Image 1: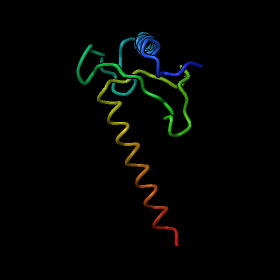
Image 2: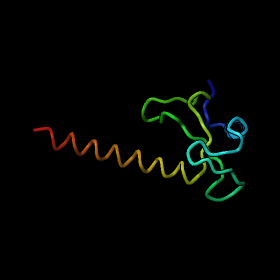
Image 3: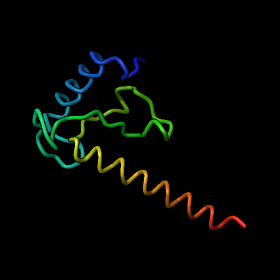
Length: 90
């Protein structure tokens, strides 16, 4: 399994995922543009920090807006869960 760190491989993966999805974001369904909020990004279905991998089966193409919004949501939910466990602990 290749890692997404190599720029040429990352570019190929992004194009491949966009083609597989018909040019639409996996979350909002908007069509991708070359620049701006609806430009395609690589999204991990199961985040690396949650044990996900860079395997193609775990990747999807999401627009920049949705990808950034999802990251914010995940971080907030992790912070809330951490607060609940720290409050619940004696």
